[in-house]
Every structure is written in structure tokens, then in C-alpha cells.
Image (cartoon, rainbow, N blue to C red; front, top):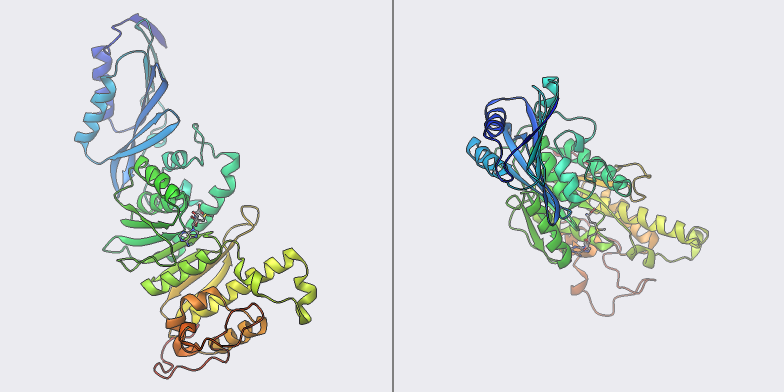
Length: 445
Ligand SMILES: C[S@@+](CC[C@H](N)C(=O)[O-])C[C@H]1O[C@@H](n2cnc3c(N)ncnc32)[C@H](O)[C@@H]1O
């Protein structure tokens, strides 16, 4: 039912003020209170809603102004009361919309100070309950209240619908998060999970993983993002601040080739870090002692340049696209073999459909095996030497691989023979480690 009365241009009718305070602070089943403020700069929207934060009911404040969305979480009733008072103290033309189980309330105060009021019918209480934090639905991004996250990242539009141009990105992130889910420890860790995202770009994956693990799975997490592009670092920092995540999501602006880390990561992520940045991410992951690495490689130019097109492979390599795919396969096979040699159990999977991205392979590497076991070294050398290539990851991990492949290239004589691609090869035959005898009690890859 709609009613219209005259009211002050600046203050809210005391009865309505009291009603909103009562229904938001003392009634349980409300879903959202939105204030739309019509000012000289256009409409600004601020909404308040209950969410589950670390298994307890909290509230999220979302502000949208000038096309920018920011989010802040409130964990105490005092903070909720303070924010509510601030919203209700707004002046000028504005609207309040309370969505609640016992019926919506819509209040509009016009430019001339008229009060327009409408009330809705009671609705099903289940619709207004905060989402349980651990209800993992099919899609990770819909298993928690991700509306603000998706809007801030620009994946969803103002109405919450996924933008057509971002559908592929959303699919990639959902698929990647399912992989994350599959490698999470069975038991809730006693300390925050340490996660590092390498080549994080605008932090779509970083912030989605943070939101999913924190809100969707109720885990304490600390995420470090590494990217060498300072402009992306700045923009991604802004997004983290907008999402009230800056405390738990920190940035390292550095090149993965030389980057150091002060913690041992439980989980290293990398989604489409360009070319050899994927190798650098894996190399750093090994050096930092990452427990698990989930790495979806991107374009691979290095081996494309190295593979010679003579001999029996000539017919294959004369076609650009086949050459590219062959180099990709070779690079990933070499990466997997090197990681196995260093004690990781490795699987390569298609993590998402090729419609979402043509770069849809993912290396899943988990530490814990004995190093240099079984036929891994021989298989690696046979593959590498057949193609006469020197994979970037081998060079980056030369010192660690020395027990099997010999001393790093820098220690070799300057006149070492040049392979077809013009760089010195080392350890062509490879050798068995002396110091590290195979431990037959451990599982082999
Ligand atoms: C294609 S973007 C991927 C961004 C992000 N992972 C995603 O999926 O949205 C690749 C990112 O890797 C970063 N990058 C490339 N080489 C790097 C290196 N050597 N060290 C650090 N970052 C690097 C680039 O700056 C870029 O932001």
C-alpha cells in the first residue's frame, strides 16, 4: 500500500527511523537495507546486509558511487548500529529500501520533501537467511555471497549479472577454485593458510580465491600476490581496499625471476602468467618449499624458438599452429618431469572447458615424494635430448637439479658445444646423484 505525506527535507520521520532501527538491529530476518541518495553528482547507493564471516553473523556495507564499488565488513553489533545511524541521518532526496521477511519497506523522500511510503507482503524467511559459509555448491563463486566481489572485479554488472565479456573469466575462476578446493587440507588448519598468486595481474583469481576461502569455506587465509607490473599492482591494491581485504591480501611488486618470500606457501597459484613467468613461478615454488602448486601455463614462446624443424618432425613443425601446440606440450611435459625429479607428484589436467580459454591445462603438483625416483630422470633426458631443447625451468632450477644433471651452466667452460638453438647444453647425459640415494620406502611418482 502506498501513502504520501509531507515531511522535513532533512530528517527522517521519527516513527520510520525507530521502525528501521528496530527491524534491522532487533529482528533477525532481514536481507538488505539500501539507501539511494540523489545528489548533484548523480545517485550514490549504499547497502547493508547480513553475511556470514568466519562462521559468525556479520554485516557487509557496500557503497557504489561514480561507478566504483567498495565493500567493508562489520563484525560487531555496535559497528552495525553506528553504520545504521549514519545511513538514517542522511539528508536530501533519498530512498530507503528494507528487504525483510515480515514485508519490505520502501521509503522515498522527494526533492520537495514529500514522503512516499510503500509496504510489501511478508515473504518466506528462508529467503532472508544469511548463507551458510560452508555450503559448497557446484560453482564456488555461487557458494558464498560473492555479489560485491564480482561487481568490484567488474565480472558482474550493477544488477549482479555476469557480463557477457567476462563469462570466460568467471568460468576460469570457478574451475580454478574447484581445483583449489580439491587440494585443501582435510582438517581445518590451526593457522592461516599461506597462499601466493604468481603473475596475479589485476588479481581476479587472487581476490576470488581469498573471498571463496574466507567466506565460502570459513578459513583464515593470507594471500600474497606477485606481479612485476607496477600499474597493475596499484590497481589491484585499490580493488583489495575496495573489498576490505587489504589486511589479508598483500602485494609483492617484483619479478618472479628474482622474487623472495618470507613464508613457506601452503599453496602456490598461477593463472596464465606469460611465457617463462610460468617457469619462474614453478621455480620459486620449489625454492620456497610450496606444499602444492596449481599452475595454468600461458603462451610458450621459448621452446617454440628452440625446436629445430629438421628430421622426422619437419612435417609437423612446418605449420605454425602445430609448432605452437607441440612446443606447449613439450614445455609442460618437461615441467612435470622436472617437478617429479624434485619430489612432486604431478598431474596435468584440463581444468576448464576450451570454450572458456584455449589455455586450459593445469599442472597440479604436490610435494612429498622421494626425489629422483624411478625412470623420471631417464624419461626427462630422453625427451629433452630428442627435441634438443633446454627448458627454462631446468635452467632456473639448475642448482637443485645438479645432483642429477650436473653443475649449472655458469660453471661450464665457455666453449661448451652449442645446440641447434644456439645455447650451450649441459648435462646432456645426466647423471645419478651420489649424495642422494633413492629412498625405496617412499612412494614413487
Ligand atoms: C595474462 S596476465 C594473468 C593475470 C592473472 N593471473 C589472471 O588470470 O587474471 C599475466 C601477468 O603476469 C605478469 N608477469 C609476467 N611475467 C612476470 C614476471 N616475470 N614476474 C612477475 N609477473 C610477471 C604480467 O605483468 C601480467 O600481469
